[in-house]
Amino acid sequence: MFLIFTPVLLVLSWLAEIGIDTPAKNLAVDLDIACRKDKPKPRKGQPEIKEETAWSFTIGHWQIWGLAAYLAFVFIITETYGVFNGNHDRIISDGSRHPAGM
Image 1 (cartoon, one colour):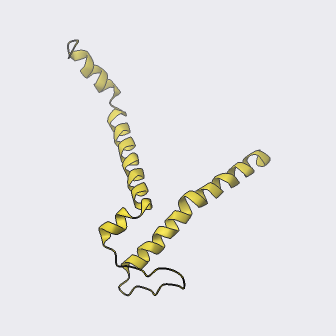
Image 2 (cartoon, one colour; image 1 turned 180 degrees about the horizontal axis):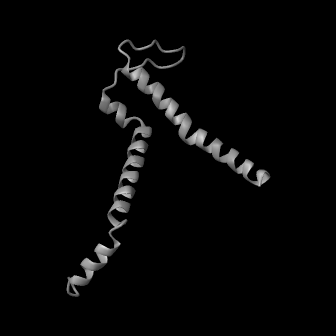
Image 3 (cartoon, one colour; image 1 turned 90 degrees about the horizontal axis):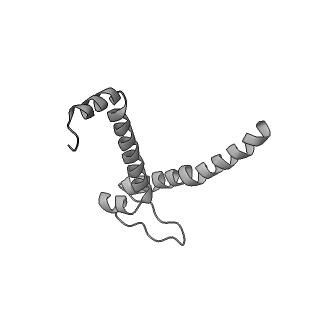
């Protein structure tokens, strides 16, 4: 079992590093720079850091949209589960009271 699952876990952790951890770190650095009152001087060969509004920062970072989509997905799934979990008897009894076709 160890020889089977160890490579799988290593590959999954590497993919999580690339897909989750690195974008989160990059977003944190960009957010830190955007929130500073005194902007840092650009490094050699890099363009100067321009002033951004909160809206332009939000539009320009896909990580924020990904987080919003993830939270919306979790909200929809949990609300859907909450509606149907434990209400099976009520849904069936409500459905049987109405005449066919309604």
